[in-house]
Length: 211
Image (cartoon, rainbow, N blue to C red):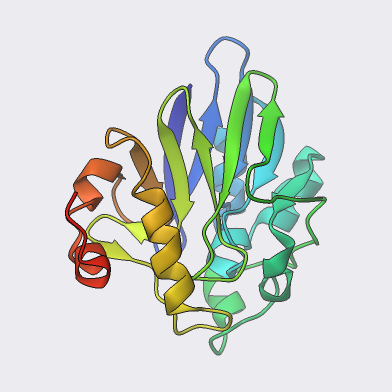
């Protein structure tokens, strides 16, 4: 399994193209901006689906565009459906050049196993940054896509609509139970590992845990 990171839009959001080299089976995770650029990177792949870790515009701003071009289903936790066309900030849609986002075709929930050709992901619900935040975990490869729940040395904000600090604390605790060599792909910034983030000051300060 290969992961291509495309950093898109004015908020430097990470869109991920995950694919198998042999079959060319692929999914797109969090296409937030620069739809034509993303589409061009997909031209040699057999795209099976679009996945979203949560509903903020900088993560779903190009779902509608790519869904129309690729004719593939859209997967997201429907608890975040109230956010997919919510500007949150003045002119947010204009800033990220978002197009109208359709409702998800499939509601993803904790424990779901999503299979797209040779690709497989376990859904882990991680509310806190938003009510419907989820992570997509490939157990075999020990790779997880966490959206804005966890960053290298930081964690997601909880002061936006639907945010909840207590729930984020619980979600982070859940993620810290994954194998320490699990590679973490965040919605912004560089990748990291679960082992590295067990010393994340936002996590150790909240939980006061000894790992």
